[in-house]
Length: 105
Image (cartoon, rainbow, N blue to C red; front, top):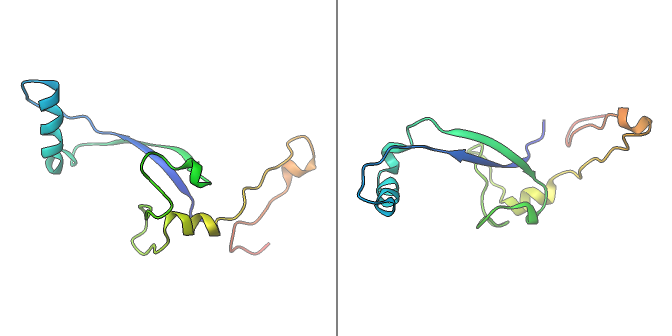
């Protein structure tokens, strides 16, 4: 199997004691070391295929999270990513199999 890039959204909920919403947000950030041990709901949103798919402040020079032995920036990874296979769903092509990058046919 070939590695791919995905955006993942996560929700972390904590109960914070504070005098206002703003103070609660500040205390959340200050307490994140303790809070991060709480259960996190994570959902993979979509695959990253181009630079335009990157969320927020991410750019092609960033290193993606993942295996610790990864040495590729997002841009370098996108450069070696095999092209997306688009199948015609109305012909026999929809049944064709295409090997993943690095696999023999």
